[in-house]
Amino acid sequence: MEVEGKSILKGIDLKVEEGETVILFGPNGVGKSTLFMALMGFPKYRVKKGRILFKGKEITALAPAERAQLGIGMSFQRPPSIKGIKLRGLSEIINSGAENGDRILRYAQLLKLESHLERDINMGFSGGEVKRSEIFQLLLQNPSLSLIDEPESGVDIENISVLGQALKRLLHKQDRLNRRTNSGIIITHTGLILNYLNADRGHMLIDGCLTCSGNAREIFELIQKRGYKECQQCMKRK
Amino acid sequence: MPAVHEEEIEARDRKKLIQVGFDVEEKERVATFTLVNDREGRGTGRPRGVELLSLAEATKKYPEAVGKHLWKLVSKDKDGFTRAAAEARPSGYFIRVREGHQAVLPLQACFFIKKERFKQRVHNLILMEKNASLNIINGCATADYVTEGQHVGVTEIYLDREATLSYTMIHDWSDEVEVRPRTGILVESGATFISNYISIKRSKITQTFPTCRLRGRNATGLFNSLIYAPEKSVYDVGARVLLEGMGSRAEVISRTISGGGKIVARGELIGMRKDIHAHLECSGMLLNDRGSIQAIPVLEAHHPDVNMSHEASVGKIAEEEIQYLMSRGIPQDRAVSLIVRGFLDTKILGLPPLLEEQVEKTIAMLEDAF
Image (cartoon, rainbow over all chains, first blue to last red; front, top):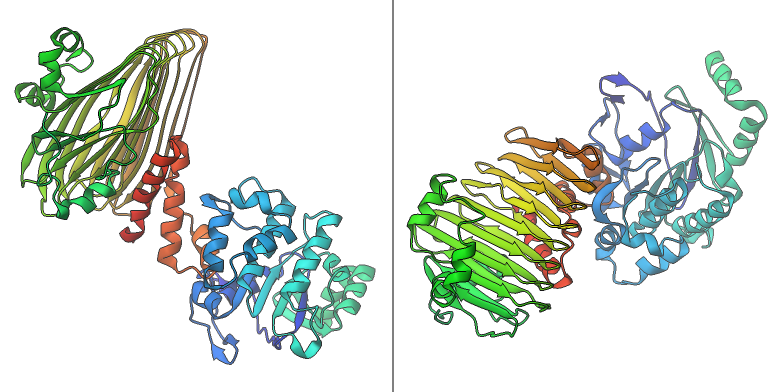
């Protein structure tokens, strides 16, 4: 996969099952967000080799809007601000397919965003408000696969728990295992979100390659103890 | 002035008029003026405090008042267009709002061309007496079956002390129509003039550069324009404000989008006295490489204690914003139109809710442009 002629990700082979939550670990700049951009289908992020399959269907050539309509959603690490479009306006468009109109208010309350509905999207929002707004929009979209980029970065402790609650709902964590249908891939640099949300698996992304896979919490504990350096060295040994 | 004739506002033309804010049923309007080609008409409203006549009638009825004000703010010899207007039989309105009268509902006027290659010559005169207030909505349009024409409109507006006038123009001309408004405004102490200029359709050329004199102390002049220039259209728009009164305040704000047309966004603020505040803002967005936007902000100060500033920016539509909306399941063309509509934010106009709703509807028509 390349961005503006520069190769970023190499030979990624990742499968996420229905109802599964997967954590993507890795130091800054290894291509975690790039992987999300490619999965969402942004034109700058070109898949040179390989395929992206979603619910058994190849989507490698589809535009972001088509992928979103099929059931892929993304929360951005640093979303743009958009002048003149109110968060309520966008929410109503996202929610237009749903029968239940009061979802907007309900989810806005859950994420403490009622007053933000009347503001331009992300305009003057704090770091935490931006994250809450992203997860709020994902809840409305209710995608089968959520790509969640660093939900906790720049968010204070109190609000991380708010986000954790919302993510639990989004990823059907309150349901029995066999009833969960929404899946998610979460990028986390700090791992804090794991204190609020259980994950099924963790993956380590180093220098554009997926290296380790295993229990998310164990990988996280290892990173906390020894840092990413050890992973990089281990990768070199391989 | 005769009543608005059914045959003048034909059923087939109604849609066009509604699009430029004209309320055919006159439900929420204090008074109505129509100019269809060169034929004037008046609605049924006869409000107290707001006097609406044709300029010809007013010239007979109030020769002194008209003589004192006509051709004083716009010179007959300004250019070929003002000369053409001076030579023609004047058609247009005379509006006077009596001292202290605050009209709640807007007065509406429509300037309509329904004859091919018709050259509409207009002269309007507005007198706002002390402490009077009014909203005027002017809808300017051509019939669907007309492609070519010319509209030359001279408008002279006087605001006496503490008066307020909000003057909104919504345009929907045909492809080959030439539009040349020539406007002069005189604002006395504590009075406020607000101009809103909205045009989102193709016209051959629209060229306007009103001059507003803020003569009195603490006078205010605000000029806002929202322009969308499709391919093959030319817009050369802006305003000049002379801040002559101590503590007077002016703002010239334009949001322009080129969808392939040529736009020149001008603003000229001239600070003459102490404690004046003047701000100029030109934001332009280019949707493709076929059009152009030129922002020409001019600030001129003649006193050291003035506060004058300008911001100008021209750029393309942000790809990042389009992608963001697309990731929410919104197709590309809809995402572009949402961003464009957001950019042409009607909130900057500070309109009363009724008119804001109308302007919103006009801007919403942009959805069809993509």
